[in-house]
Image (cartoon, rainbow, N blue to C red; front, side, top):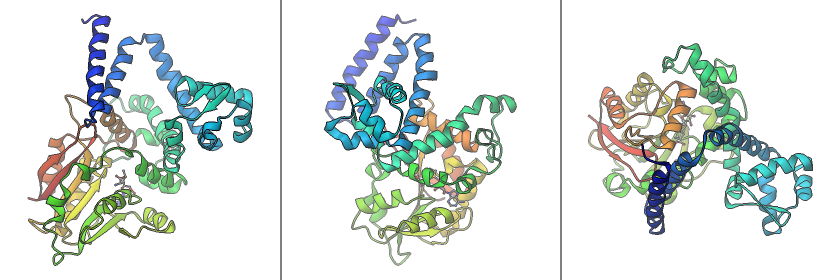
Length: 399
Ligand SMILES: C[S@@+](CC[C@H](N)C(=O)[O-])C[C@H]1O[C@@H](n2cnc3c(N)ncnc32)[C@H](O)[C@@H]1O
């Protein structure tokens, strides 16, 4: 076994190389530095510290961040900017008793989320970023919805005798955690404001990462060869949520030919239209288990769709597209995490467990995605990926 000091030296060397790569702006270098830093902590920590961090410090931090949303803690710090806020002014602004607030805020200082200097609290770049609406909704979604589902894992799995849960999503940790029998997507609609928080979270959780069109050759494979006599639709974003992908694609390719259409369930489209839908794409209600109404579009794009469903349902979703595809022209693009069994990333494993908790399903390898496509009479053409990005872009067409 490697001595701890040798292991620490090896990690520090790796950190040093990753730092050089970061200075050269190499893709994936920032993520690699974070990963090496985690390895450093894992090597240095002793069990009592590990338990304290994992079971006290991190859960307490997320609980404080959740209540910070209610009392607008990060927004008050952001507004104060360089003026900084003493404990008593922060207490006055948030309405949290000063003695209580000192414990809560001190923990955030220890976790390096905010700073304390010269008798006053200061925002950091992270606390300011978290003050944005979509992250505030994401925090509520993760704390109120995800956490009870994940907490239910041990008792749930004991109850089903450590078998894999059924992939139809009818009996999963989410049901025990939330004392419901509704399927996840129906429960979101039935329990406001969870649908709103979920949709907002979906638009935020990949923020700051390269988009699929940053590493998929869009001009060459989609825009060139667009044929308006086949259909006036360039891209259909199937199950597109609030349309964040459709909007950012339209903003990136401002002079794209054809229309962009975004489809989702009725409550999602209704809430989008109530906010005043974007002009850059058309939003329409469509159940992706029913035949695709837009025939002969150049692209049918499905982002984080199949990973919510077991194999039988995923094949049905793909089969519902097939009659709409024009052979040799239409492409199906799947934007999905592709599991790498040799080198699993935290982004992939944590999403895999989210899927297990809420739907009883799992993230798939490239071979597993290829097999779903084959069952639906499609063919995997090529998988495109990018360093540091958990999701890959799988291009497929009619077999
Ligand atoms: C994980 S989210 C992905 C949203 C978006 N594509 C993204 O990547 O941010 C799954 C989406 O599928 C939608 N959805 C679930 N069941 C659906 C159905 N039967 N028909 C159409 N959309 C559905 C949900 O409303 C949600 O917007």
